[in-house]
Image 1 (cartoon, one colour):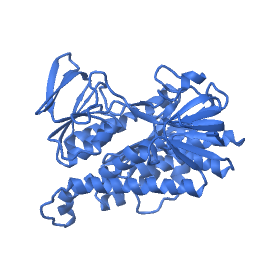
Image 2 (cartoon, rainbow, N blue to C red):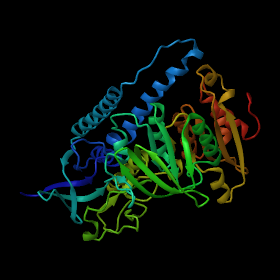
Image 3 (cartoon, helix red, strand yellow):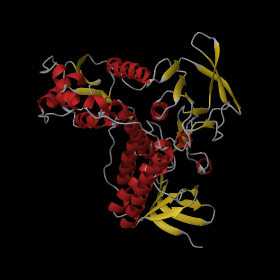
Image 4 (cartoon, rainbow, N blue to C red):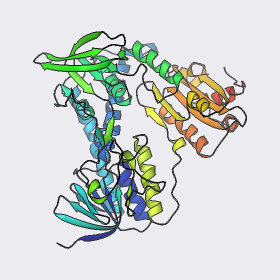
Length: 463
Protein backbone atom coordinates (compact mmCIF):
# COMPACT_ATOMS: atom_id res chain seq x y z
CA UNK A 1 0.00 0.00 0.00
CA UNK A 2 1.34 3.40 -0.99
CA UNK A 3 2.26 5.78 1.81
CA UNK A 4 -0.18 8.58 2.61
CA UNK A 5 1.39 12.02 2.45
CA UNK A 6 0.80 14.89 4.86
CA UNK A 7 2.28 18.26 5.77
CA UNK A 8 2.28 17.23 9.43
CA UNK A 9 2.00 13.89 11.20
CA UNK A 10 1.22 14.17 14.92
CA UNK A 11 1.81 11.26 17.30
CA UNK A 12 -0.59 11.34 20.25
CA UNK A 13 -4.11 12.76 20.57
CA UNK A 14 -3.92 14.19 24.07
CA UNK A 15 -4.24 17.92 24.89
CA UNK A 16 -0.92 18.65 23.17
CA UNK A 17 -1.56 16.55 20.07
CA UNK A 18 -5.20 17.24 19.23
CA UNK A 19 -4.87 20.98 19.91
CA UNK A 20 -1.76 21.09 17.70
CA UNK A 21 -3.69 19.25 14.98
CA UNK A 22 -6.49 21.83 15.04
CA UNK A 23 -4.03 24.72 14.90
CA UNK A 24 -2.23 23.06 12.00
CA UNK A 25 -5.48 22.69 10.10
CA UNK A 26 -6.34 26.33 10.77
CA UNK A 27 -3.01 27.30 9.21
CA UNK A 28 -3.77 25.29 6.07
CA UNK A 29 -1.69 22.19 6.76
CA UNK A 30 -2.80 18.70 5.79
CA UNK A 31 -2.66 16.92 9.15
CA UNK A 32 -2.70 13.29 10.29
CA UNK A 33 -3.26 12.48 13.96
CA UNK A 34 -2.08 9.03 15.14
CA UNK A 35 -3.49 7.70 18.42
CA UNK A 36 -3.06 4.23 19.91
CA UNK A 37 -6.41 4.32 21.73
CA UNK A 38 -9.80 4.28 20.05
CA UNK A 39 -10.87 7.33 22.07
CA UNK A 40 -9.11 10.64 21.58
CA UNK A 41 -8.07 12.99 24.38
CA UNK A 42 -5.10 11.15 25.85
CA UNK A 43 -4.52 10.66 29.56
CA UNK A 44 -6.11 14.00 30.46
CA UNK A 45 -9.57 13.35 29.11
CA UNK A 46 -9.70 9.58 29.52
CA UNK A 47 -7.94 8.70 32.77
CA UNK A 48 -6.58 11.95 34.20
CA UNK A 49 -7.74 15.55 34.50
CA UNK A 50 -11.38 15.15 33.50
CA UNK A 51 -12.48 11.91 35.21
CA UNK A 52 -10.63 12.83 38.40
CA UNK A 53 -12.36 16.22 38.51
CA UNK A 54 -15.72 14.55 37.94
CA UNK A 55 -15.13 12.25 40.94
CA UNK A 56 -13.76 15.13 43.01
CA UNK A 57 -16.93 17.11 42.36
CA UNK A 58 -19.24 14.18 43.09
CA UNK A 59 -17.43 13.34 46.33
CA UNK A 60 -17.48 17.02 47.38
CA UNK A 61 -21.24 17.11 46.92
CA UNK A 62 -21.62 13.89 48.89
CA UNK A 63 -19.63 15.27 51.80
CA UNK A 64 -21.27 18.69 51.64
CA UNK A 65 -24.68 17.22 52.47
CA UNK A 66 -23.58 16.63 56.06
CA UNK A 67 -22.75 20.36 56.44
CA UNK A 68 -25.97 21.87 55.12
CA UNK A 69 -27.73 22.23 58.48
CA UNK A 70 -25.91 25.54 59.07
CA UNK A 71 -27.68 26.83 55.94
CA UNK A 72 -31.05 25.87 57.37
CA UNK A 73 -31.30 22.76 55.18
CA UNK A 74 -32.17 19.59 57.03
CA UNK A 75 -31.22 16.42 55.15
CA UNK A 76 -31.92 12.81 56.09
CA UNK A 77 -29.59 9.85 55.81
CA UNK A 78 -27.45 9.90 52.67
CA UNK A 79 -26.61 6.78 50.72
CA UNK A 80 -23.68 6.36 48.35
CA UNK A 81 -24.34 4.74 44.97
CA UNK A 82 -20.73 4.33 43.86
CA UNK A 83 -21.67 2.51 40.66
CA UNK A 84 -23.80 5.47 39.57
CA UNK A 85 -21.09 7.95 40.55
CA UNK A 86 -18.50 6.11 38.45
CA UNK A 87 -21.01 5.91 35.57
CA UNK A 88 -21.52 9.68 35.69
CA UNK A 89 -17.77 10.17 35.52
CA UNK A 90 -17.59 7.85 32.51
CA UNK A 91 -20.40 9.79 30.85
CA UNK A 92 -18.50 13.06 31.20
CA UNK A 93 -15.44 11.44 29.60
CA UNK A 94 -17.51 9.95 26.77
CA UNK A 95 -19.09 13.31 25.96
CA UNK A 96 -15.79 15.18 25.85
CA UNK A 97 -13.86 12.57 23.88
CA UNK A 98 -16.74 12.39 21.42
CA UNK A 99 -16.53 16.16 21.09
CA UNK A 100 -12.87 15.93 20.11
CA UNK A 101 -13.72 13.37 17.45
CA UNK A 102 -16.20 15.85 15.98
CA UNK A 103 -13.58 18.61 16.08
CA UNK A 104 -11.23 16.42 14.06
CA UNK A 105 -13.92 15.86 11.45
CA UNK A 106 -14.81 19.55 11.37
CA UNK A 107 -11.18 20.52 10.75
CA UNK A 108 -10.63 17.74 8.17
CA UNK A 109 -7.92 16.07 10.24
CA UNK A 110 -7.31 12.42 9.40
CA UNK A 111 -7.32 10.32 12.56
CA UNK A 112 -5.46 7.01 12.39
CA UNK A 113 -5.72 4.49 15.25
CA UNK A 114 -2.65 2.46 16.11
CA UNK A 115 0.84 2.59 17.61
CA UNK A 116 3.17 4.96 15.78
CA UNK A 117 6.84 4.24 15.24
CA UNK A 118 9.17 6.72 13.58
CA UNK A 119 11.15 5.13 10.75
CA UNK A 120 13.08 8.13 9.47
CA UNK A 121 12.96 11.93 9.41
CA UNK A 122 9.72 11.94 7.39
CA UNK A 123 8.17 8.51 7.88
CA UNK A 124 5.86 7.07 10.52
CA UNK A 125 4.69 3.45 10.57
CA UNK A 126 1.37 2.64 12.26
CA UNK A 127 1.25 -0.88 13.74
CA UNK A 128 3.70 -1.90 11.04
CA UNK A 129 0.83 -1.99 8.55
CA UNK A 130 0.40 1.58 7.35
CA UNK A 131 3.02 4.12 6.29
CA UNK A 132 2.59 7.89 6.65
CA UNK A 133 4.88 10.46 5.07
CA UNK A 134 5.10 13.87 6.70
CA UNK A 135 7.04 16.96 5.78
CA UNK A 136 7.24 17.36 9.55
CA UNK A 137 6.49 15.07 12.50
CA UNK A 138 5.32 16.24 15.93
CA UNK A 139 5.69 13.91 18.92
CA UNK A 140 3.01 14.45 21.58
CA UNK A 141 2.83 10.94 23.02
CA UNK A 142 2.20 12.00 26.63
CA UNK A 143 3.27 10.18 29.78
CA UNK A 144 2.55 7.11 31.89
CA UNK A 145 2.63 6.49 35.68
CA UNK A 146 5.98 5.72 37.28
CA UNK A 147 6.13 2.16 38.61
CA UNK A 148 8.39 1.46 41.57
CA UNK A 149 10.60 -1.66 41.22
CA UNK A 150 9.46 -3.07 44.56
CA UNK A 151 5.79 -2.09 44.05
CA UNK A 152 4.70 -3.40 40.65
CA UNK A 153 1.15 -2.53 39.61
CA UNK A 154 -1.24 -5.47 39.72
CA UNK A 155 -4.48 -3.54 39.20
CA UNK A 156 -5.94 -5.06 42.37
CA UNK A 157 -3.87 -4.36 45.46
CA UNK A 158 -1.11 -2.14 44.07
CA UNK A 159 -2.82 0.35 41.80
CA UNK A 160 -2.03 3.39 39.69
CA UNK A 161 -4.05 6.57 39.18
CA UNK A 162 -6.12 5.00 36.39
CA UNK A 163 -7.14 2.11 38.63
CA UNK A 164 -8.02 4.56 41.42
CA UNK A 165 -10.73 6.04 39.19
CA UNK A 166 -12.44 2.67 38.73
CA UNK A 167 -12.69 1.13 42.21
CA UNK A 168 -15.87 -0.91 42.67
CA UNK A 169 -16.08 -0.43 46.43
CA UNK A 170 -14.82 2.16 48.92
CA UNK A 171 -11.60 0.90 50.53
CA UNK A 172 -11.55 0.60 54.33
CA UNK A 173 -7.94 1.84 54.45
CA UNK A 174 -6.55 3.49 51.34
CA UNK A 175 -2.76 3.85 51.45
CA UNK A 176 -1.25 6.38 49.06
CA UNK A 177 2.47 6.41 48.27
CA UNK A 178 3.20 9.96 47.18
CA UNK A 179 1.57 13.08 48.64
CA UNK A 180 1.72 15.09 45.43
CA UNK A 181 -1.11 16.38 43.26
CA UNK A 182 -2.49 12.98 42.19
CA UNK A 183 -2.12 11.44 45.65
CA UNK A 184 -3.90 14.35 47.35
CA UNK A 185 -6.72 14.46 44.81
CA UNK A 186 -7.39 10.72 44.81
CA UNK A 187 -6.90 10.55 48.57
CA UNK A 188 -9.48 13.34 48.98
CA UNK A 189 -12.03 11.51 46.80
CA UNK A 190 -11.90 8.24 48.73
CA UNK A 191 -11.70 9.91 52.16
CA UNK A 192 -14.93 11.81 51.42
CA UNK A 193 -16.59 8.59 50.38
CA UNK A 194 -15.69 6.88 53.65
CA UNK A 195 -12.17 5.47 53.45
CA UNK A 196 -9.43 5.97 55.99
CA UNK A 197 -6.60 7.51 53.94
CA UNK A 198 -2.89 7.52 54.78
CA UNK A 199 -0.39 9.28 52.52
CA UNK A 200 3.29 8.31 52.75
CA UNK A 201 5.91 10.52 51.14
CA UNK A 202 9.70 10.74 51.07
CA UNK A 203 9.51 14.55 51.19
CA UNK A 204 9.13 16.25 54.55
CA UNK A 205 6.56 18.63 53.06
CA UNK A 206 3.65 18.25 50.68
CA UNK A 207 3.41 20.07 47.32
CA UNK A 208 7.05 21.15 47.15
CA UNK A 209 6.39 23.13 43.94
CA UNK A 210 3.94 25.47 45.69
CA UNK A 211 4.61 28.60 47.73
CA UNK A 212 5.54 27.88 51.35
CA UNK A 213 2.47 29.64 52.78
CA UNK A 214 0.18 27.49 50.63
CA UNK A 215 2.01 24.30 51.64
CA UNK A 216 1.61 25.03 55.35
CA UNK A 217 -2.05 26.04 55.10
CA UNK A 218 -2.93 23.08 52.90
CA UNK A 219 -1.31 20.54 55.23
CA UNK A 220 -3.14 21.93 58.26
CA UNK A 221 -6.46 21.82 56.43
CA UNK A 222 -6.03 18.35 54.94
CA UNK A 223 -5.10 16.95 58.36
CA UNK A 224 -8.21 18.55 59.87
CA UNK A 225 -10.26 16.94 57.12
CA UNK A 226 -8.98 13.53 58.18
CA UNK A 227 -6.14 12.75 55.79
CA UNK A 228 -3.24 11.08 57.61
CA UNK A 229 0.30 12.01 56.55
CA UNK A 230 3.55 10.13 57.13
CA UNK A 231 6.19 12.50 55.74
CA UNK A 232 9.93 12.06 55.41
CA UNK A 233 9.33 8.32 55.09
CA UNK A 234 11.05 5.89 52.74
CA UNK A 235 8.93 2.99 51.47
CA UNK A 236 10.93 -0.25 51.78
CA UNK A 237 8.56 -2.99 50.69
CA UNK A 238 5.01 -4.25 50.50
CA UNK A 239 3.38 -7.65 50.67
CA UNK A 240 -0.09 -8.71 49.72
CA UNK A 241 -2.40 -11.25 51.32
CA UNK A 242 -6.04 -12.27 51.14
CA UNK A 243 -6.86 -9.69 53.79
CA UNK A 244 -5.19 -6.79 51.95
CA UNK A 245 -1.75 -5.24 51.80
CA UNK A 246 1.02 -4.36 54.24
CA UNK A 247 3.43 -1.50 53.61
CA UNK A 248 6.81 -1.31 55.32
CA UNK A 249 8.53 2.07 55.56
CA UNK A 250 11.39 3.73 57.35
CA UNK A 251 10.34 6.93 59.13
CA UNK A 252 12.29 10.18 59.40
CA UNK A 253 13.98 8.89 62.58
CA UNK A 254 15.20 5.72 60.87
CA UNK A 255 12.69 3.40 62.55
CA UNK A 256 10.98 0.66 60.53
CA UNK A 257 7.18 0.68 60.64
CA UNK A 258 4.34 -1.27 59.04
CA UNK A 259 0.83 -0.20 58.07
CA UNK A 260 -1.96 -2.39 56.78
CA UNK A 261 -4.63 -1.48 54.27
CA UNK A 262 -6.66 -2.95 51.44
CA UNK A 263 -5.31 -0.83 48.55
CA UNK A 264 -2.01 0.92 47.85
CA UNK A 265 -2.09 3.72 45.29
CA UNK A 266 1.40 4.45 43.94
CA UNK A 267 1.44 8.07 42.76
CA UNK A 268 5.09 9.07 42.68
CA UNK A 269 4.96 10.86 39.35
CA UNK A 270 4.79 10.15 35.65
CA UNK A 271 7.40 9.52 32.97
CA UNK A 272 7.43 10.35 29.25
CA UNK A 273 5.84 7.74 27.02
CA UNK A 274 8.77 7.66 24.61
CA UNK A 275 10.25 4.17 25.02
CA UNK A 276 8.75 2.49 21.94
CA UNK A 277 8.61 5.28 19.38
CA UNK A 278 11.84 4.33 17.61
CA UNK A 279 13.62 7.50 18.71
CA UNK A 280 17.11 6.01 18.98
CA UNK A 281 16.82 4.43 15.53
CA UNK A 282 16.44 7.83 13.89
CA UNK A 283 18.89 9.70 16.14
CA UNK A 284 16.47 11.61 18.37
CA UNK A 285 18.26 12.43 21.61
CA UNK A 286 16.66 11.92 25.02
CA UNK A 287 17.94 12.66 28.52
CA UNK A 288 18.51 10.08 31.28
CA UNK A 289 14.83 10.21 32.28
CA UNK A 290 13.49 9.66 28.77
CA UNK A 291 12.54 13.27 28.03
CA UNK A 292 13.16 14.32 24.43
CA UNK A 293 15.77 17.04 24.03
CA UNK A 294 14.45 20.03 22.08
CA UNK A 295 15.64 23.51 21.16
CA UNK A 296 13.76 26.79 21.62
CA UNK A 297 11.64 25.96 18.55
CA UNK A 298 10.57 22.52 19.94
CA UNK A 299 12.78 20.89 17.34
CA UNK A 300 14.53 17.64 18.23
CA UNK A 301 18.00 16.60 17.11
CA UNK A 302 16.32 15.58 13.82
CA UNK A 303 15.54 18.67 11.76
CA UNK A 304 11.99 17.72 10.69
CA UNK A 305 10.83 16.21 13.99
CA UNK A 306 9.42 18.24 16.87
CA UNK A 307 8.23 17.31 20.37
CA UNK A 308 5.93 18.89 22.97
CA UNK A 309 3.95 18.19 26.14
CA UNK A 310 4.81 15.50 28.68
CA UNK A 311 7.49 14.09 26.33
CA UNK A 312 9.72 17.12 26.86
CA UNK A 313 11.14 18.72 30.03
CA UNK A 314 8.92 20.95 32.13
CA UNK A 315 5.77 20.59 34.22
CA UNK A 316 3.45 17.78 33.09
CA UNK A 317 0.34 19.91 32.67
CA UNK A 318 -2.34 19.62 29.99
CA UNK A 319 -2.49 23.38 29.42
CA UNK A 320 1.29 23.56 29.09
CA UNK A 321 1.17 20.81 26.43
CA UNK A 322 -1.62 22.52 24.51
CA UNK A 323 0.23 25.83 24.36
CA UNK A 324 3.43 24.11 23.26
CA UNK A 325 1.51 22.23 20.57
CA UNK A 326 0.11 25.49 19.20
CA UNK A 327 3.50 27.24 19.34
CA UNK A 328 5.35 24.36 17.67
CA UNK A 329 2.85 24.12 14.80
CA UNK A 330 2.91 27.88 14.29
CA UNK A 331 6.70 27.69 13.96
CA UNK A 332 6.43 24.74 11.56
CA UNK A 333 4.01 26.76 9.42
CA UNK A 334 6.36 29.75 9.33
CA UNK A 335 4.56 31.86 11.92
CA UNK A 336 5.60 33.17 15.32
CA UNK A 337 4.87 30.83 18.23
CA UNK A 338 5.63 31.54 21.87
CA UNK A 339 4.97 30.12 25.35
CA UNK A 340 5.55 32.20 28.47
CA UNK A 341 6.53 29.47 30.92
CA UNK A 342 6.37 31.88 33.86
CA UNK A 343 2.65 32.36 33.20
CA UNK A 344 1.69 28.67 33.46
CA UNK A 345 -0.43 28.07 36.54
CA UNK A 346 -0.31 24.93 38.67
CA UNK A 347 -3.48 23.77 40.42
CA UNK A 348 -4.39 21.08 42.94
CA UNK A 349 -8.12 20.34 42.74
CA UNK A 350 -8.64 19.36 46.36
CA UNK A 351 -11.08 21.37 48.44
CA UNK A 352 -10.00 23.97 49.23
CA UNK A 353 -8.08 24.28 45.98
CA UNK A 354 -4.39 25.17 45.80
CA UNK A 355 -3.12 27.28 42.89
CA UNK A 356 -0.05 29.26 41.95
CA UNK A 357 1.46 31.07 38.99
CA UNK A 358 4.82 32.77 38.53
CA UNK A 359 7.48 32.74 41.22
CA UNK A 360 7.03 31.58 44.79
CA UNK A 361 8.36 33.86 47.50
CA UNK A 362 11.47 31.71 47.95
CA UNK A 363 12.11 31.54 44.19
CA UNK A 364 11.81 35.32 43.85
CA UNK A 365 14.36 35.87 46.61
CA UNK A 366 16.70 33.23 45.18
CA UNK A 367 16.61 35.08 41.85
CA UNK A 368 17.77 38.28 43.58
CA UNK A 369 14.48 40.14 43.87
CA UNK A 370 13.78 42.27 46.89
CA UNK A 371 10.09 41.52 47.30
CA UNK A 372 6.99 42.99 48.84
CA UNK A 373 4.11 40.72 49.77
CA UNK A 374 0.37 41.29 49.92
CA UNK A 375 -2.02 38.78 51.48
CA UNK A 376 -5.75 38.86 51.93
CA UNK A 377 -7.85 36.28 53.75
CA UNK A 378 -11.10 34.91 52.36
CA UNK A 379 -12.62 35.38 55.84
CA UNK A 380 -12.84 39.14 55.18
CA UNK A 381 -14.55 38.73 51.79
CA UNK A 382 -18.33 39.24 51.55
CA UNK A 383 -18.94 36.59 48.89
CA UNK A 384 -16.84 34.03 50.77
CA UNK A 385 -18.94 34.61 53.88
CA UNK A 386 -22.18 34.40 51.90
CA UNK A 387 -21.28 31.02 50.40
CA UNK A 388 -19.62 29.69 53.58
CA UNK A 389 -16.15 29.37 52.03
CA UNK A 390 -14.03 31.52 54.32
CA UNK A 391 -10.94 29.30 54.53
CA UNK A 392 -7.92 30.47 52.56
CA UNK A 393 -6.20 33.51 51.15
CA UNK A 394 -4.64 35.13 48.10
CA UNK A 395 -0.96 36.06 48.15
CA UNK A 396 0.66 38.50 45.71
CA UNK A 397 4.43 38.79 45.30
CA UNK A 398 5.84 41.93 43.63
CA UNK A 399 9.29 43.37 43.04
CA UNK A 400 9.93 46.03 45.68
CA UNK A 401 11.59 48.44 43.25
CA UNK A 402 9.49 48.09 40.09
CA UNK A 403 6.20 46.76 41.56
CA UNK A 404 6.15 44.16 38.74
CA UNK A 405 4.01 41.16 39.62
CA UNK A 406 6.29 38.17 40.18
CA UNK A 407 3.80 35.62 41.43
CA UNK A 408 0.26 35.02 42.62
CA UNK A 409 -0.81 32.16 44.88
CA UNK A 410 -4.21 31.16 46.23
CA UNK A 411 -5.56 28.63 48.69
CA UNK A 412 -9.31 28.34 48.95
CA UNK A 413 -12.57 27.95 47.09
CA UNK A 414 -12.28 28.46 43.32
CA UNK A 415 -8.54 29.16 43.50
CA UNK A 416 -8.28 27.41 40.11
CA UNK A 417 -10.44 30.16 38.59
CA UNK A 418 -8.91 33.07 40.51
CA UNK A 419 -5.40 32.20 39.37
CA UNK A 420 -6.17 33.10 35.74
CA UNK A 421 -6.01 36.79 36.66
CA UNK A 422 -2.48 36.31 37.95
CA UNK A 423 -1.47 34.47 34.77
CA UNK A 424 -2.88 37.29 32.63
CA UNK A 425 -1.09 39.90 34.72
CA UNK A 426 2.24 38.08 34.35
CA UNK A 427 1.69 37.64 30.59
CA UNK A 428 1.25 41.42 30.24
CA UNK A 429 4.07 42.28 32.70
CA UNK A 430 1.57 44.05 34.93
CA UNK A 431 2.33 45.58 38.30
CA UNK A 432 0.60 44.89 41.58
CA UNK A 433 -0.87 48.37 41.28
CA UNK A 434 -2.43 47.45 37.91
CA UNK A 435 -4.43 44.70 39.64
CA UNK A 436 -5.18 46.95 42.63
CA UNK A 437 -6.63 49.66 40.37
CA UNK A 438 -8.70 47.22 38.31
CA UNK A 439 -12.37 47.35 39.32
CA UNK A 440 -13.57 43.94 40.46
CA UNK A 441 -17.30 43.21 40.63
CA UNK A 442 -18.87 43.06 44.09
CA UNK A 443 -19.54 40.71 45.74
CA UNK A 444 -17.09 38.22 44.23
CA UNK A 445 -14.27 35.98 45.39
CA UNK A 446 -12.06 37.82 42.88
CA UNK A 447 -12.10 40.85 45.17
CA UNK A 448 -9.63 38.95 47.34
CA UNK A 449 -7.11 39.30 44.51
CA UNK A 450 -7.65 43.06 44.34
CA UNK A 451 -7.31 43.36 48.10
CA UNK A 452 -4.11 41.26 48.12
CA UNK A 453 -2.69 43.56 45.42
CA UNK A 454 -3.63 46.59 47.52
CA UNK A 455 -2.02 44.90 50.53
CA UNK A 456 1.32 44.84 48.70
CA UNK A 457 1.55 48.56 49.63
CA UNK A 458 -0.53 48.15 52.82
CA UNK A 459 -3.53 49.85 51.20
CA UNK A 460 -6.11 47.06 51.57
CA UNK A 461 -9.57 48.38 52.32
CA UNK A 462 -11.25 45.50 54.14
CA UNK A 463 -8.33 43.92 55.96
